Structure formats: C-alpha cells, structure tokens
Length: 288
Length: 292
Image 1 (cartoon, each protein chain N blue to C red):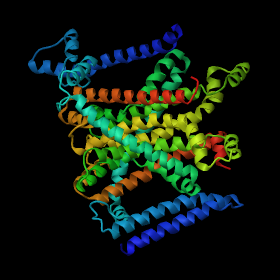
Image 2 (cartoon, rainbow over the protein chains, first blue to last red; image 1 turned 90 degrees about the vertical axis):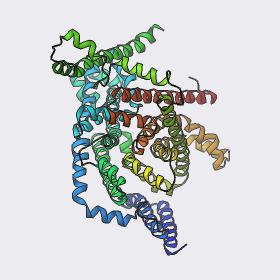
Image 3 (cartoon, each protein chain N blue to C red; image 1 turned 180 degrees about the vertical axis):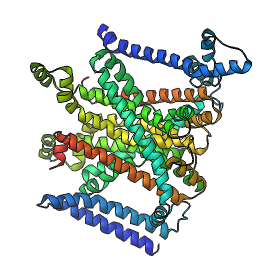
Image 4 (tube, rainbow over the protein chains, first blue to last red; image 1 turned 135 degrees about the vertical axis):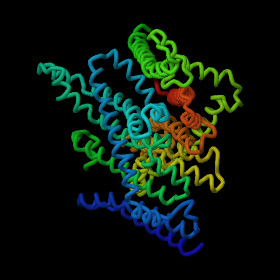
C-alpha cells in the first residue's frame, strides 16, 4: 500500500458518497434535476479514470500491459494526423457508406415486398434467422471479392445491416392498427397516401430501433473486416499492427477515438429518433 | 395443418429456392472468367455449354457451388476423426466452449448488475448510462489487445476469448433483466407490502418470476452474440484453432470452400444454440404455469 492506493480509495469513497447524496435529492426545478441526472454518471466516469490512473501508478504496472489515462491522452494529442487518417478510412469511407447503403436497401426491399404477404411470410423468418447468425464471418469472402480497400468493408456492413433493417421495417409497417387503416380507407386514401401519412409514421420507432442496432454493428463489421486485409490505414489495421509492435498506448488512443466516434454516431441516431418520434410514449415519458 | 403449410412452410421454401437459383446463377457468372482464362491460355475456345459444368467443380472458386460446400462439410465432420486438427467438429468444439464460458459469465454478471441497478438508485443513475455507452465501444477492436496482453501475463487459451464473449453478452442481459425486474406493476408490489413481505421475499416471489420471459428473450440475443465474440476472438491469435481460425487460414490460402464450410458450421451452431435457449424458455414458462 502506498499513497496512490490511499488516494484511489479516498476518491472512490468520496465519489460514491457524493452520488448517493445526489440521487436522494428531490429538486423543485427541472434544470437542477436534469443537471443531477448528467452529473451522477459523469462523476462515476471520472472516478473510474482516477482509480485507473492511481492503480497504474501505485502498482507500477508496466505501460506495455496497461498505460495510464494520462499517457493515453498524451499519445492521442501527439498523433492526431495518423488518427485522423484512420478515422477517415474506417469511419467516413467504410462505416457511413455501408450503413447508409445497407439500411437504405433494407428499407427499400421492405417497402417493395409490402404488397406481397407471401414474400413477407417467406422473408421474415429467414431475416430473423440471419440476424442471429455470426454474419461478420463473411468478411474474408468480401475481402477476396472486393479487394483490400474500403469497398469490401462497405460490402460487409451492407450484409450485416440489411436484415435487421428489413425485419424491423416490415414489422413497423404492420404496426398501424386496423381502426386507423379503416379510417384511411374511408378517406379513399390510395396505398401510397396511406403509406406516407399513416403507416410510415407508425413504423418510425421500429425503423429507429434497427438504425440504432445497426450503428454499432457497422463499426464492428468494418473493424473485423480490416483484420482480413486492408491498405496500410484504418482503425482495425492500426490496432492489430500496434499491438504487434507493443505500442499499447497507441492502441488505447485508437480505442478512445473509436469509442467517441461510436457514441457520437449512436447519440446522433438517438437524437433524430427523439425529433421524429416525439409523439411516442417512450420519448414523452423521458421528458418528464 | 394445411394453413401451417400455406402460411409458413411454403413461403419460406419458395424464398430458399429463389436464393438457391440466384446462387447457382452467380456461381456460373463469377467463376466463368477463370474457365475462359484457362482456355485462352491453353489456346482453345470453350462454348457456354462447356463452361457451365466446369464452373461448378473448381478447386478454388470465387463462389463455390452449394454441393461443394456440403461435400466439404461432410468430409470434415463425418469422414475425419473428431480429434484430427482438420476436423471441423474439433474446431467447432473449441469455439463452442469459449462461447458457453463467456455466455455463462456474461449472464451471471448481467443478472448481478441488473439486481444492483434495480435495488440501488445510485447504481442505477451512475451505471446505466455507462452500460449503454460501453456497447458503442467496438469491443471487437479491443479483442486483439485483450488477448495479447493476457497472453503476456500468462493467461491464454479459453479465458481471453471467453472474456470477449462475456463483454458482448452481458449487455442484453442487463437491459432485459432491468426491464423484467421492474415489470411487476404497482398493484402487485403493493400487495406484497400488505403481506408484510421483506425485500428478499418480494424479489424471489414476485420480481424474479416476473422477469423470466425478459431474461430468456435477452439470453437468445446474448448467446448469438457470444458466438460472434468467440469467433472474432480467435482471429488475432494467429489462426491456431477454432472456427475463426478456419476463416483466417482459409482467407490466407485462398481456400474459399473452407471459409464457406466454416461459415455454415458457425451458422448451424448459432441456430442450435438459439433453439436450445428457446426450448429452455418454453420449458421454464411451462413449469411456472404459463398456458401456451
């Protein structure tokens, strides 16, 4: 036991006590309760970082096993150009393109088979089955077919994101109740009008569910596909080579970038969900 | 019976047949250039009727025909002894053991976290956002590092792969169990209060049984994703053993049929695991007296 260990213990106990105190408060104003809602997880996160830093220093863990957060931050700020190039290759080129193409394709196919109950009954069980399969396994095949650069990664993401989108959209399109559909029929609304005015809005919660699932799947798919061959740039490539060169702090810097990118991506999808499905009980309930 | 045939089996079979037809067309389309190339080198010309049979029997096709994959699967599962390193059963077992270990640890961890979150407001507020944020971190990117680092401190084999599966599978369990443990409505909780039930009695007699349907739904997701974690965890170990290693070595040596066979094996494994959890789900609900 030394000073760092006591510091870690003290910070942990203080933060815990603070959080226990914070969640017991019943503030009158909305702003204060919202601030508490943000502060509690923030304090928890900061505590984790402090304990990590103290443990690494206290036990003198060699940086090759686990670098301290401060060392990772130094590496992160020191190698921005490399990280930016990797981010561009992995995220902007592969993830975004594949995500848009895969989700768009799933959505279009769902609309196309909407008029054929036979095809729906055939495709839904298969879609559900494929969603449970380890689809990332197609990565080596796609790398063989489409080469080392980003098109092969896009292909993997399209295959991974297609089926969740298809299944959820088909389910969502049948979410509008019979009463509402009958109402549209009494208005003499065409199939197209019913789709745009009634069934698509009712399907948004399902579609956004798929969009959220796919946002994490897409990043995973690209990084795994990069294990099977890439040009000398990309997050998955950088992580596997820097592990080989024992630059663990660079690996952690890359992981930090991936985590932030993934969280921001997910957050953007969740935010647009709130904007589009503002009428849904789960969103209204969250704004209390 | 006829309605089952008409509404379920017939549409699915039609779609599967359509997929098979498209597959065969693509086999011809993708493999034909190689046949033409070979013919051009030999200085002969081939007609279309000569090309088609050849595209179905290449040794390293761009897209193997289904019968080639089935032959490879038969050859590596039934025709080889299980202990052989070329047996797909051997590799599937290695992946399966890591999957099950990770799934078990993930389930226990997930349930423990969910119980804590439901019973402690501070844990709920401080942990829940991070549990959700943890899933936006692509753990599969971290996988190679976990394996290499654990290797360097002397832990190798099953555990590192299982840890990756654990990380991936605990999330659906936490989310499902928190929802499930909170699912009994105020009326039922109040009833337990009037019985003067203690916290643990409320938990075991009301919350836990009420959470069962949610738990099993989460477990189905969790076991599928554990398998993904185990397969990906095998990639950076340098292709030693397991289905992931089969994928990697197949991609190194251009053995497309081997990749597809490993892929089908993984798909079959996922289907079996998910249906086992589904059967357990039905069994537990039946024991609890839920009418189908």
